[in-house]
Amino acid sequence: MPPALCGGTFGTDRPGIGAEGGERMRETDGHPSGARPLDRWLPAHMAAALDRLNDAGFAAFVVGGCVRDALRGVVPHDWDLATSALPSQVKELFAGVRVLDTGIRHGTLTVLLPEGPFEVTTFRSEGPYLDNRRPASVGFVASVEEDLARRDFTVNALAFSPRTGLVDPFGGQADLEARLLRSVGDPAGRLREDALRIMRALRLASVLGFSLDGRLAEALHANRALLARIAPERVGTELVRMLPGAQVLPVLLAYPDVLAVPVPEVASAVGHAQRSVYHRYDIWEHTAHAVAAAAPSALVRLALLMHDLGKPETFTVDADGHGHFYGHDRRGEEIARARLGALRFGNDVTETVAELVRDHQRHLAPENMLRWLNRLGEKRLRLLIEVKRGDIAAHAEDVAARGLADLRLSEEALDAALAQQACFSLRDLAVSGHDLMALGIPQGPLLGETLARLLDAVIDGELPNTRESLLAAVRPPVSAAAKAILT
Ligand code: ATP
Ligand code: MG
View 1: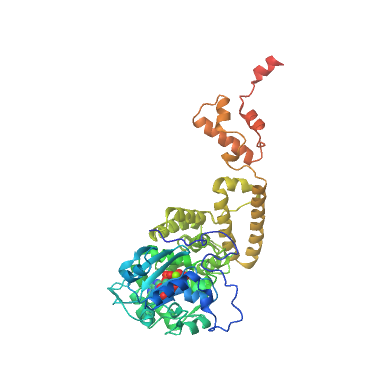
View 2: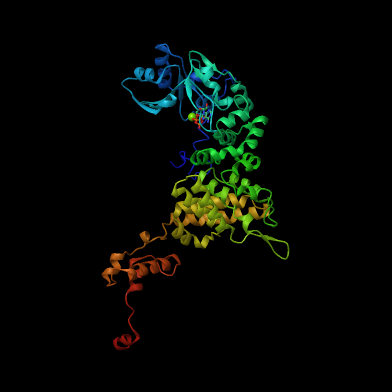
């Protein structure tokens, strides 16, 4: 399965943070943290589900990311339940409701209530891990505390129920307040159990804007090679969830060695001087700043992550000592295609990103906007503009200021062309193939060529896009001899 592309994050909406940023709760003030009435944020159907389990004598809590998000004042995007009830008992209690065996071997069911689905997992602990990604066994346990102990970070090891209140055996709430990501237990050991936690740590740091506890940070560097054992699509999913984060910059600057496991070309970009008056940063610093300066769209930021990875291989220095990177866009395109393919991104994502990398240097002159619209279509062209915005912003200051002003002019020209419903594709042309056939042009290559020439003439402003002018242009010209006879 290709990496999951979470809703919103692949869009281009500029100020909007993708789904990850989360909608802020409207009522976060007035409650000293710790006394925030979590149950007020619990949807009625989740409270009812907890009640149903409790009334049957089982312990039950909302748990993990939803408690973390509710405590920091962000509406949870989903609610997970943990309970002492076994899956079969959960099914009995929710007889009459559709229940899916999502991960029944690990005790996870999905209950499909009319108000929305939720996952419910039986309290469990995990046996020893054998291969850095999977426990050898999972066992059901009686207490929520034991269940919380298997979770990755203290801020994710929180449980809540209206009857019991907050269950926080590892100081998760204090870490939330300190905006600190800390492992439950020994970080190196926890990362060795499941190396995906390396990417989860970077993703959560970027999205939540938390700093990493010193021991965890050290363990991320030391254990990074284990990431190679994780299913590539899971690494890819965490990568695209990390990139739109509001605090992606410090993560990229501090952990290129980790990112170089899935994307090895990152390693040679780190510390690579550009020897150019156009740049204030080395290649990797430039990349990190470009990603952070762009719209929080995973597609745009994935393209920016890759856009200059062809530079180290194409670096040359001229007689004056100036650095050049001829063809780095083409090389970058190849690298993007190879690495995103290896991370099992779908063909659409891989191709879009590879082509954005290929085009990132192209000048989008305002007078050529119809041409660009014709070549890329509006959606792709807007993505390219966002890629260029990030790239240009991370150049030398004066270059960036001028470049960004130019880009705004291009964008205005694009908006104007679209507002005028200008013609830039065959679909918009005032004549169709049928019209030309009616003039006697046979169906076949000539028909296609003629339409393409007409479109070119309209885009270049040589012909108005009217039926009259276009048909007149293709009618066989009256020969000079005929003219002489006629006049
Ligand atoms: P989000 O839903 O925003 O991605 P989340 O923390 O809820 O964040 P999920 O993948 O939904 O992430 O996982 C739910 C919970 O399961 C986490 O909060 C954490 O407690 C636990 N968890 C998830 N993945 C792991 C892991 N690899 N190792 C240990 N615990 C994990
Ligand atoms: Mg979750």
